[in-house]
Length: 130
Image 1 (cartoon, rainbow, N blue to C red):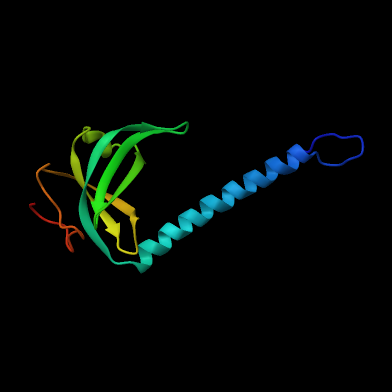
Image 2 (image 1 turned 90 degrees about the vertical axis):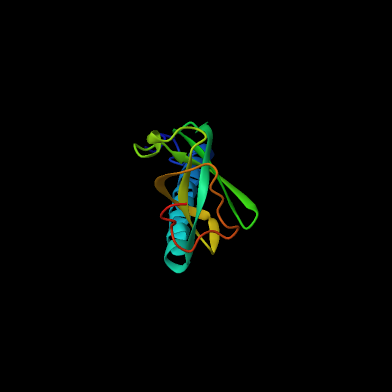
């Protein structure tokens, strides 16, 4: 709704608010497009991720995942789904990461024994029995 001003001009606060909203929408669209481009154009490998803790924001409560690729640690707070509720803090599961950007990943909801150590660069194929 446009504020009702006597001279019919938009307030600076209204303009800033609309600008921020448009910026947030464009950022979300761009981020989603980037992830999809990486998923389509990149080869992938598999590794294990550890569920470290419960994480939260104003929008949701999730699980903090940690995994390593080529000596670099990656962290993410993933939203809670019915699948991830079956796992406890301290459990490990598989993730598929993309070589062009290892921070882009997909969770594979299959429990992995804690003692399983993936290769530094990940597995080419998902291990059937690690």
